[in-house]
Image (cartoon, rainbow, N blue to C red; front, side):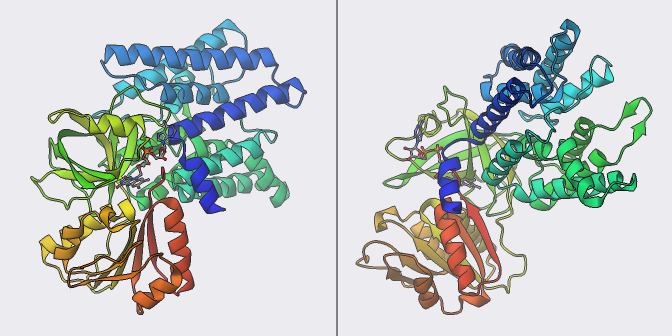
Length: 500
Ligand SMILES: Cc1cc2nc3c(=O)[nH]c(=O)nc-3n(C[C@H](O)[C@H](O)[C@H](O)COP(=O)(O)OP(=O)(O)OC[C@H]3O[C@@H](n4cnc5c(N)ncnc54)[C@H](O)[C@@H]3O)c2cc1C
């Protein structure tokens, strides 16, 4: 099931997935209105929707022109749709004008409240908040209705699953639902009915799935993301007033964004492209010189933005950093390039040395334990070797002895990337490939043609006492994680390269 899900939703980018889900919810709202299951007339829904989406799309183009950047049409359509679900549907000119203003403020916030190519606040939330502070309109979050909840919940699950932020979404929903239900129950309602009421009348699931999950406004580490989720949940569900400002979901989210920003490390990183080298017949390594020293831990990833005429997969991609941290050194990433590749990868490979690109953040928790006595098992499927390349290079540079076994599964031996680095790291390497190589370095052994639980147990008899790290395509990662669990491995960290 998880393999199938990964394959299906891994085909589209996060932005495309959110857009598709929001369009589906909007279509469902219109259909429900037509059959009388939603109180708003179709013409009010359509008028507000067209104004919100149209204003967001047009103003984002204007701001992109003014700030001489490429517009991001999908992001503007998402912002417009989010605003559509927030404001009371109406055909009144003043209401529509305030929705258009909210969309304009949302678009402007991507540039005005931004630090190095990265906006600080959720644009839709800041647009809605500004319009309500100006007392021109108030976001009612009409999307929070029982009739739309099943579709909203499925969509939110897909988005959070795809972005690996289920824990963040669940943390928010559980805390906000419990507090919300307790408040309703305190008025004398039965607790189960109070919980149902909290879930259907507050926009918990919608906010968790499509707004809190926005990658650019989340902090980089998992614990920081969970802290922000918990904070937004409390501010969301406990009413308060600060002078003329009343609590609201959009205020809770904006406050959470500010805390996320304070966690730091989310600034856009300017990189000069240095050049590329072939890693294997199907993979390239690309090197970049950062303008200022970049702090990262081996095993973390960065998100690269390459402006170009993008196909439906968009202008951004996440890649694990394959180089070790070095104050003055270049940063490298490595990627496979299939015959029929995305426009992003083609544009990346065509970059001229010296071209400036931005990375919009470094993050991830796929990092080695600080306790050097923990024995490790690093399992890579193909290009999944990249975070391990960084970690092994770092260990070699620091001279820190660790007990490491690398299991490296590749289609054939020509596809072995970073072989020299693995060899010089001194780690024991268990190779799994279609054919047995004629010769292997001293600390390497060939274990078979297919990586299975049996092969793992045989090749690494003490695997149950090791902390395991698994990296590669989502299908590979879920298969190996299951095999390791069945073999008694208790601590398993995974880095799932969604997109393959
Ligand atoms: C935490 C994390 C770390 C990652 N680290 C790495 C890493 O270190 N190295 C790495 O290579 N990847 C990594 N990835 C995956 C990476 O982000 C991309 O998702 C992946 O490389 C796929 O890239 P792509 O979308 O450019 O498609 P491609 O790799 O170009 O293509 C993938 C498949 O989609 C098909 N396809 C591509 N474009 C189109 C199109 N327009 N229409 C139809 N079909 C198309 C191709 O034919 C191919 O079958 C990581 C992902 C995550 C989440």
